[in-house]
Length: 548
View 1 (tube, helix red, strand yellow):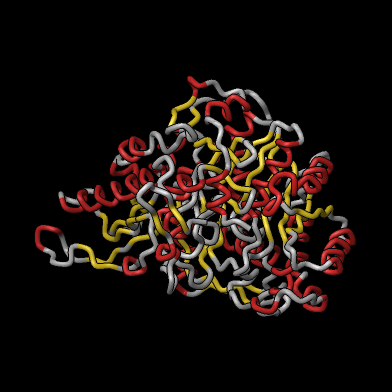
View 2 (cartoon, helix red, strand yellow):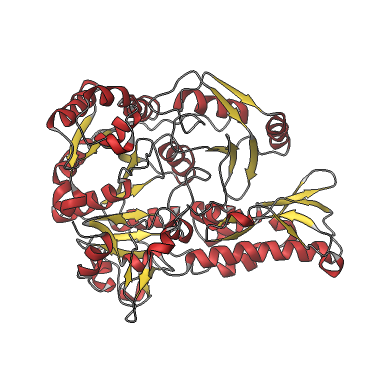
């Protein structure tokens, strides 16, 4: 099969004005970035149905969650439905690090894939700049008198690239006119609070209000100092004036796709912007969106944070699984997954079961399982998963959109239309009126299967202080490994009764959530031994190879 970039390059793109016209968006409501990209400046008047695509816990093999969202949207488009996508923007760090791209795969991609994976419309740069403007303004305030009595700065600088050497650095190393030497560091842009704040904002006024509530540090009374205290929100918003507008592109089969915002899911809430989702719903009858990593991280945050904050309610949830990933969860090495192994499948399918129980039992959402089929899957293995789902009262369908595009997702699309007809009441994992400790306990035990929750002394003190400072009614955002339901990446399948150890607590006032860190989660990833950056080339005509 051809590589992703070959398939993308051979696909014939339509002018973005033509794609926008499918949604009823006139050209005077577009800001064009060349022929195939645009920002949309006006909302429509529809009230479409939202469908979330999530997955089992990810494995090194990749389950194809973004690919399914794209292929399913294309299937609905080919069947004559008014459908569009609302997805996240890729970060340059993973693109040149280990991931290589984040625009789908095979014959289910969003285009132009090179542009989207690289600089796109400049949103990431704008967010990075706004973040670092604030960092500079904080240092400048301290330099010229420090009227706010800032004694500790917790706000960090960002860049949209993996660079482990910047995690901890000494600022003003030589002191003198540059101020006293002190420790600081960089996070990747996708892990920044500016990113999460932009993604949860409803409009420019809400964005400025949220930016003003961000904590930049603490004074000598250990009270939080906010961005609004140094009046930095206006200048930050100026840098974000274009980044706040949603981006419109297209899929291989010509489905409109809003791609906007890109917070990480293991350390933030992992969803595209509220603005893009609402825009998509105002133009299309059906909107496909996704949440990062497995349903334990992605779907929980999508519902408990994004849906609650934005007043959204998914009409259905699609849960992606593969035979090989379930066998991997059953203890089979990734080099030995091809032979049929029903015993390993039986051991590993409990991971799928955990997510089914959470989505159906806790959140009560109408659920559809998508089995992403590979050539190496046997009929017996596929039948085993189907029976497992049907025994639990869950709809299930085969999906082959990677190899066949939208046509490969027709069965999935047909089942989705049936599932979307179900009426239900959306539930949450916790109430906002719960204490932060109660919220953490509910998510850890109900969603992850923990037996108990323990806090390090530092985390316990930060939790107490967050309540004391008035942040006790915020949502919580669990930061943990994506590879397991537990904080231990090596515990595959469905671990239960484990100790859920909380190591740190950080209030994100702009995002209106409290980050609950469990174990070591990198806010600035490093590059692998052989980064994807070293596998890419560009020729004299500007043709890129190795991007996928």
